[in-house]
Length: 444
Image 1 (cartoon, rainbow, N blue to C red):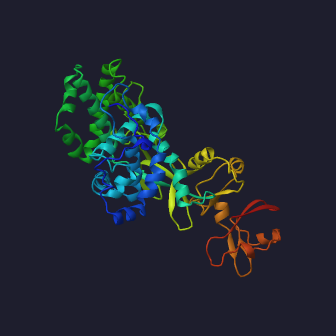
Image 2: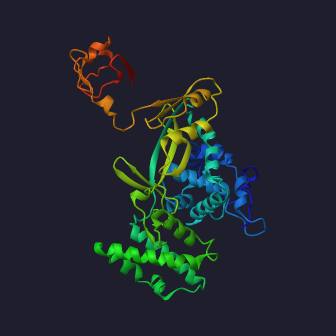
């Protein structure tokens, strides 16, 4: 498929254009809908040129117009539709055809798989080059959309969300079995000789026997068997499977889940061996998914950081986003946003509202004229030295310190009243005693 640009400036009006078939009243209503500003401002701003790298340089069947694919993807997110729903909207709703400049098309260019294949191609290009074409295209439209929505560029909101990967939670037995089974099947497909004791991994019912019909008391012995098979497999793969994804995941699982003893035999890694981090393989079906525990819940997948701006009517627009493994911290997201953010041209400060986990380099924020407004504290427990003070609200004094001293308040003169909350909740004053005669006070 070769790349052919869909130049909106040289469009030819067809005799069978669906817009000309509308009555004068219908055309007037259409021109007052959301489709007109999208067609005249947003759609022409879509730059197709970077996407040429996805297509063949040889003459062949022309591609589905890239600006239609990108524009449909934007409308899909704005209207919260599935691939099938946005395809139906383009087929039967004149507003979508008008917005995407397809009213003169004899046949609408999208099929039920067009968007899915387009995203898959963009993802493959990202994996190969590190360039996210869709992200760059959508972000290039934000200036036009922000101007259209009259957004306040001096006020932004930033937050992250967990994005679950559609994978099964695997125990260590199932994870190791799956990696070994995938590798054995790949070797068989390549015609490589296998020991007879490994042939069962290729049988259709073997997984049910090992995993689903497993009793808890059998788990240890089954893992031992798999570890012995791993030792048998490794020499058979050397120099023959180096470029195979099945082999690479197999090796990764071994390094993360096992260690070798003095005799060169494999055993499961334990806490005494250094444990395992959150980047370990969760499921071979999605090798990039990471593990994260947050607010008492387990997550396997990714995290997305979203920056949005709001207008006076309360309408918001995502002006930037970032997608990472779910063990990527909010602090790192804040640093990335600051590094990518241009300095304020007007000289006015840009306020970014975020929760308490978004900390950043104060010097970098000052350099970009950005103020991070944290809306609440992080959920970590207070240190004992701060948490174990007892206060008397009526007498405005400390009645007991962590060391049991009830007359600590006599060591300094301080009016505590401004720091006391209206109700008996968390105190707004944290005091750290360094010596009987010195202290520090921090208000938050």
